[in-house]
Length: 510
Image 1: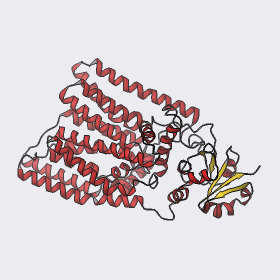
Image 2: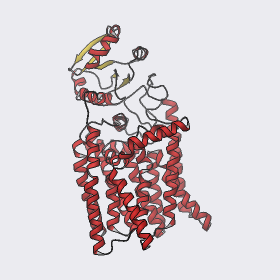
Image 3: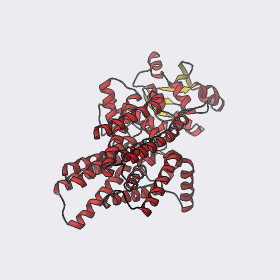
Image 4: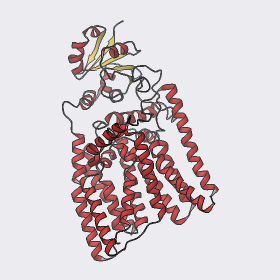
């Protein structure tokens, strides 16, 4: 039975991946949050360059965004970042396969998403004891538009989320079977998630809160479980110390501070913006209608004929603590939520899915042929209705126009690494990229380290020309347009090396 159940999940995921992901899987990371995706690819490439030194992650960029907002040239491209375990794994796969392409990264994230959905199915089945209801949970989670988009990107949210799902599954099994081995696996999975993505400390703390409640009641605690928890906490604290050291020593390309609202009025404005712009990205309208209908039907059914399986109180406590922790984090990072929809994956996505499982636990079991047919038909209707939402979202998020400067930049820099090789620009040359659309995109595509000018105001340009670099690279559209008009005197300081019609390479005159 379980084998058939997992086959259905895998078959559904395979179909959804072919339809929703394959058309975009070989693209260079761009579009929504292409900047952040290029940063993750640069980290993976950095590990290949530095001999897999996990403790000194690096990108391609010498002038970091924090703390000097790209205005200071550092001595190294090393950057502070949450322990980049996923990027490190991808670097190993790239080295092993001999393929230094973002497609390896995408396949890794896709694989981790599949693993997470399979364990979500196992988790749902363990709680609900009903295959059809458990399948609905998986389909519901897999067709969230925000999940679908980031399932095919290079960001660490989906892989870390999958480790959390695995951790919750093994913790549930520990609660039911009392095998310490399951607790150790659970803490390990949750530990990997929180070390790689600090936001996922929330489910780890929720688990510790439940264990503390048990200890208060029973006054008993397993020494081996305590050691497991302390090890995870120790590794996490060490990673934070290392991160702070890297921040102080080198700076960072990644956000490392809280961003709460400045006032209650701003908080209300931000929440309104988030609800208006993202609610149908988090879940589609079909998702919301499905939950509403389930809730109404269960209320009516419970009023006339109380029935349905019940779940242990600890699961409700866990979900409640999880939601509370996510709410605290959202308050501390509300300014980020307005522009970064993947923060929902880091926070409320999984507790919402767990809440759905709790809700379905009160629905009558599909233990009769008529109920199986009814539930099965409703699931087919749900899939048919909701599938078009992420499909439409995917098309919308991957569309671009001539005004999409990041995508134009990606087109212009395609093949630029080979072009630089042809004109004898050394692999270790330092490149100054003018009017960069993202810090790491152009440098990664050129396969060189360098500096980026993200702001074309005069004082920024003049400061950049005082840095130490070997070559200056422009996109031709910017060079022949705005730069020649606004800064003709700066052009006299440059000597053209070569152009391929899309980008031009210069040296500074002595």
